Amino acid sequence: MFKILFVCTGNTCRSPMAEFLLRDFLEEEGIADISIQSAGISTMDGMEASQKAVTALQELGIDLQSHRSKRLDGGLLAEADLILTMTREHRDFILKNREVKEKNIYTLKEFVGLKDNKDIVDPYGRTIKDYRQTRDEISDSLQKLIVKLDQSKFKAGKKEKTENSIKGRDDKVMKVAIGADHAGYEMKKEIIDYFRQEGIDYQDLGTDSEDSVDYPDFAYKVAAGVATGDYDRGILICGTGIGMSIAANKVKDVRAALCHDVFSARSTRNHNNTNVLTMGARVIGNGLALEIVKVWLAEKFDGGRHQRRINKVQQIERGEF
Ligand code: RB5
Image (cartoon, rainbow, N blue to C red; front, side, top):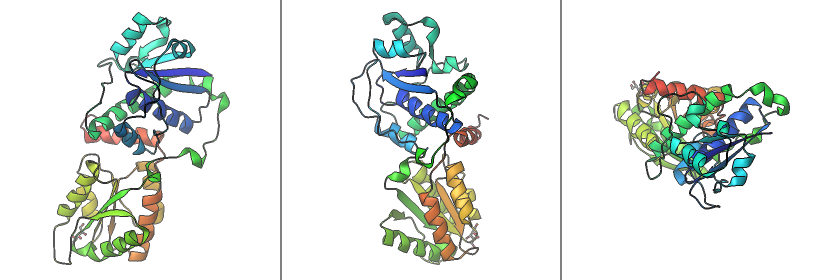
């Protein structure tokens, strides 16, 4: 069993994110013979992961709540075949103070060949957006790590992925924002009735009648609320669903999907990790719309290769592609 150890300062955000993300990626790739641990240089044993790190991974369907911090010690270092630190400072501290074979320790970014900016900086005390950025930075490096590791060496224990390996935020109570224009108003009421019956936590962001309004006003309210983390998911309804989808997708960090069938609703959660659903009340009836809502709210993100693709979409969004 090849052993990888991720190291950061407190072992409550960066290195646990790396540990859990990599475990998820390896599971997706069917690579079983790698064990992954994480530890912190200045920490105590037994602390929970920081809440924002938990949230950032929950958004990918990965549950970090079971993590408990570990203080780096000689035993963990001696056991590891590869030690990957978040910063050069971590790496140099270990090299100076501990007995490790120099060839086994790198910063994560230098190991995967990212030449500039070798550090993954600490998001501690910053916003959820910063945690998401750190998560994505780690995730990008891990995708390169998987390619770099000699996978054939680790394929022996290949195991089939099971449904149970998909965990995540959908296990906790979600808060849903819903909005519509005049064309979607009636359908919104139906969906809200369903939320009430089921005790789903929701916020109605309008419109409140069939008087003519402009769909971008409501698309923006819902999409911005999801992007800032005030809501976990958003649902938007207009006549066709198209205007809402165009407008919502202009908001950074929003992935809005127009769905008029259950297959698309399921797939777009599994593959695109969409956080906003749009529908057209002049295209489908309330019955189908409710089925779509149920499936879209319940389905989880599959992560793995789909996360790599989303990372690319996000690079396009940031103008870095
Ligand atoms: C309103 O008539 C209609 O244009 C709007 O509801 C929506 O379909 C836009 O995409």
